[in-house]
Length: 237
Image (tube, rainbow, N blue to C red; front, side):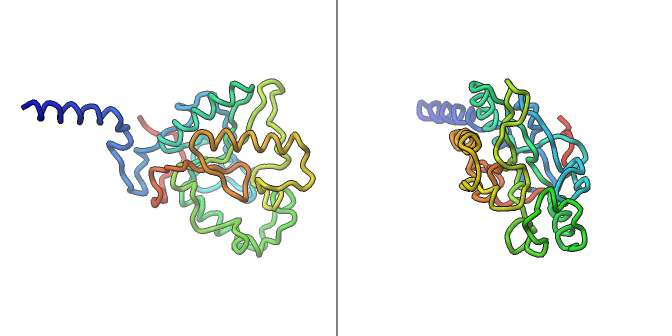
């Protein structure tokens, strides 16, 4: 009897560490139950969802973005809350450009990349890259880590100046200038700003991408093999 009581107590204690997401984990691509609206977990975050607007490398609102809100898995959102709390100590807020990206949006990118005549946004986002090279050089792919729900594109916002922090380059610029290790003609301040964002994200469980200074993925992402298809919209509680 004593053994049974001890076992029951251990199981109850273990249940305290099982998150609601883990308790109802589903890998169905159309099931958003493991996701949250990012601003509900990170209320200080600033949102500029580029693919809901027409100011992006395609030049149109991207399929699947029904509302200008960012979604992430519960685990990723909770980790990002820690990043937000950390950067606030230094006078910054996080600003998100994109988080969860449905597969239909990725498909939209692929169709656009295959249309070599559509170069409306070339001078803004890929001035030095020939559009015929977008697939070969890895700028466009048929699958995206964003569709797994634990990847985010973001920058820092300076609360003192009321402006984005100068990173020496813009979000979604196709080119070597966007690589985190790019030195080129960047100033010491720009390099320092990139490094601060990178350090803050790595410190709280995210890993970087070697081609985009703004791109980070939760190391222990809960859906490493699932590419979700539901649209970006305010989730029903």
